Image (cartoon, rainbow, N blue to C red; front, top):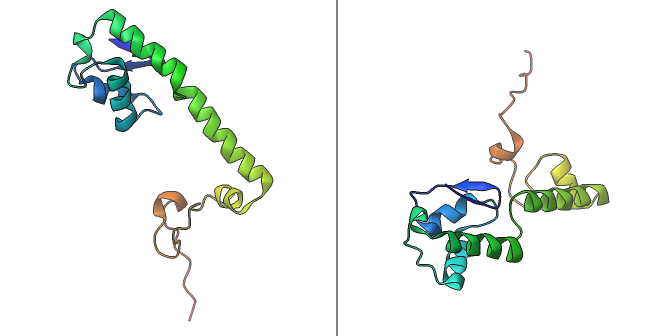
Length: 122
């Protein structure tokens, strides 16, 4: 089992797909890493030599912000916005959508389960 950036990546999968198990690396970045190091994206992780795994590990450590550092960076960005009290910060604070989506009908993922309001008594 290859361990890169503190994550055990699956050995049976293709390198291109396995790298996406690391937080902060998507398909495009994984392809770019493979291309940069001259590794065929179709190769399985268990077929990689130790030298290739070390090269991948070093490339990710030097060139990309991943895992804990990325999570910390995002959390700090959100904290900065809430402390400033700007519009986006207020939206984060109220747990509402930040990027201009409508909230009258949708936004259930962000707002949580719908809470019924008691009807008017007759």
